[in-house]
Length: 207
Image (cartoon, rainbow, N blue to C red; front, side):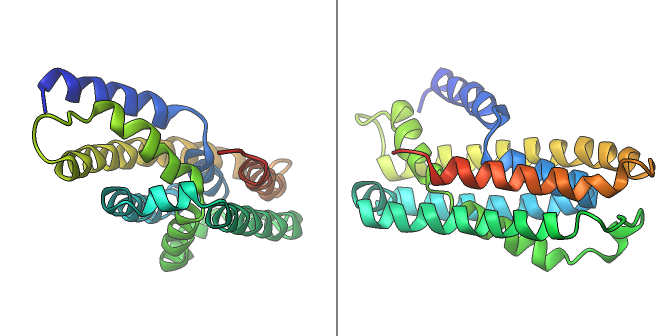
């Protein structure tokens, strides 16, 4: 693995992670609605899911899902249904006033699990590893599996850093919005809309 290749990978990974997608929009929605710590715990869940995808890609499970129409469809629609369910819950609670001190009573374990489920039920993540990582693999030098693991962990670190930054900035924005009586009741509506958009995007996505 050459230094220039690693630097190129890091640059591409940063750009792709910053681009609007299901994971960062999910962190954004949670952080605005429930504060920065909600975003951070969701991020930890998402990154745990990424770790699973790294392992799956390394041993070839992602390729099996990609080449199996049934497996791909099951994962895709399960993820879409889950997100639409979260959207429904947010719309249902849209009339409730959000507590400014909600961060003190967050169910961190539930947020962490929600992040894991969200990431694992997004087949685009598995396809991303299959399409993106091989471009940086040198098949003539070193083990392909080891290279996949190295790039995977680099991507994991980048995702963790960027998602935490999104949590901090979005959480601050959410704090300001919740202080406005005319806006704080609408934050769940915004969160629900984001969940619905992500879910529909996954449901109608193609391989």
